[in-house]
Length: 319
Image 1 (tube, rainbow, N blue to C red):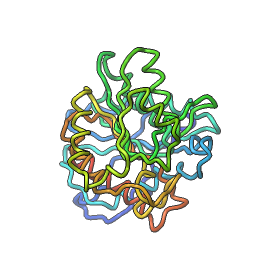
Image 2 (cartoon, rainbow, N blue to C red):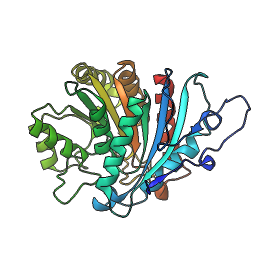
Image 3 (cartoon, rainbow, N blue to C red):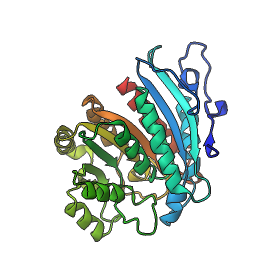
Image 4 (cartoon, rainbow, N blue to C red):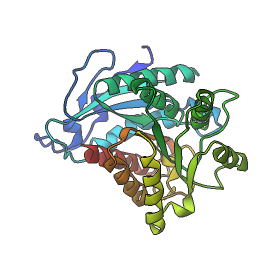
């Protein structure tokens, strides 16, 4: 694949202990085009979706294609608490050739399926949120047809815009909703942290018409933590597996200035971490991605550090 780029050791920087005390010492550089062994222990596969074509099509500010490597540079500095048997593999980046976004999504789907077939947990680094369409389809390809996947999206936006002019960062869950409608299968979707100042009325109407669940930003906070937990439990109990996607533009710009669509009105990390804990403890989580990091607008790598911290928490909790 001409748009596949191998992982780079220079993206994994940090202290050297000689005893794998840091993730830059723990990570192994791998290659999706060559066979890697099935591992009975927990294995995490990091793959970058190095594209902001979907953001460009959605009239956003570009730069998210540089997000995956920025996350790696912060993740590598963090301490390693994984067991010796647990594997952390970096498979490099899938890049967008020109404007061939739809081909990139198909490649992501095939790669995610390969990871899951090898008993490996995909952690996809974004990149624009259109990766969610490809990521979800990789899960579908892996699972039996009778299994349901619940999508939990931490986001300011529904991303339920019609794709009549092509796929973009605002359309992935609309596309999935339409496919489920055609197939006559339930669309299991929960958006946490959506805001009225970030979504038009027709998007709320579409969510209601397609039985998509959501929780407004004003209720997605620690003050309403019990309500958040109840909504999550109800959603999780109704599905077989979970796919979780974290859009960094859902966070307040106080925490995440370096995103494609920043706002000071977003949510905070504490409620996301509390929610992730519940999601992971359900033992239904299949895959995770963190999207929309735009290093061009980051301040002191603050957003990259947030993304890395979320991934650090998730892999250690899953392990």
